[in-house]
Image 1 (cartoon, rainbow, N blue to C red):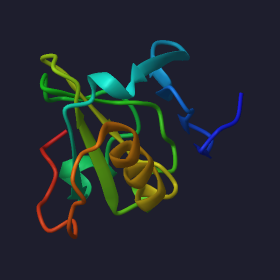
Image 2 (spheres, rainbow, N blue to C red):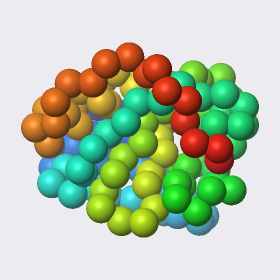
Image 3 (cartoon, helix red, strand yellow):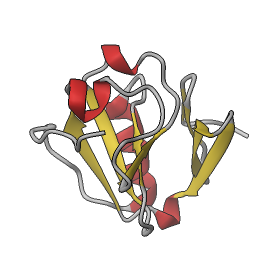
Image 4 (cartoon, rainbow, N blue to C red):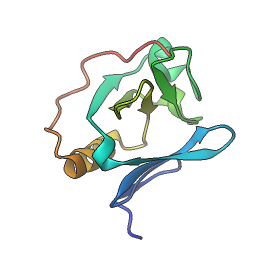
Length: 119
């Protein structure tokens, strides 16, 4: 199956987004593009994502395992119509956001001018 994006933790296939290391200990979350209602780009700081490599302190969001997250500055929050929103930090957030918007028909977003939630 051809991939439209792939890094160590995030994979965009033609049908769905796959988030590795989402479930303990190493489970993968599959999110069909049709279930993604919105994607929000946020700037991270130590308390808003960069300091958390897995899990959350905020019950509204969940971060997959990403040991490189402290060195990243942009995160993507996905609204999939459930109580918990996946918070992902792909190596190339522009590419992942573009793939998601292409497959979902969501309008283009601007710069990440808002800070992420406390995680």
